[in-house]
Image (cartoon, rainbow, N blue to C red; front, side):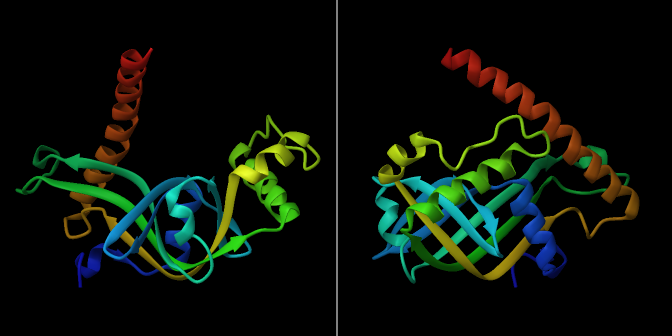
Length: 199
């Protein structure tokens, strides 16, 4: 089994927690040896994942009824330098990732699509709810023909949590702090750099 058993997390709630906290999924399908990859937020609706993508996306045909799909939710990740450990180690990379594999179904009912947009917006606006999408907002009616809405009935969750579990308690704590510290710093530096390049 790969990754090693101590990097596999079989607790369903832990994988779902990753998906709820980091809802932007990498959605992966394959047909005739060709892969299709789309990035879109997926939100839980009654234990199913629901999402919307552009109706012109070529991935649409594989996000209809009875196609198998994998959605990857990536949490924090970072390079771990041996310098942070008290014991002698080699360089590695730690990460928190959840895979959801399931069967897709197209959602065609316009009222259901609009409601899913309202629910998704409310979820993403929490906890402050500074914006509320009105189910009667006419702009949604104009937008719906250009949206492909789908749900994924998840058949299997797989947690891939590489957190230095095979190290000493002190080294595990150091790796945890490095994961937090590097993500906070790298996100700010990266976003500032990308904005400087694009604006």
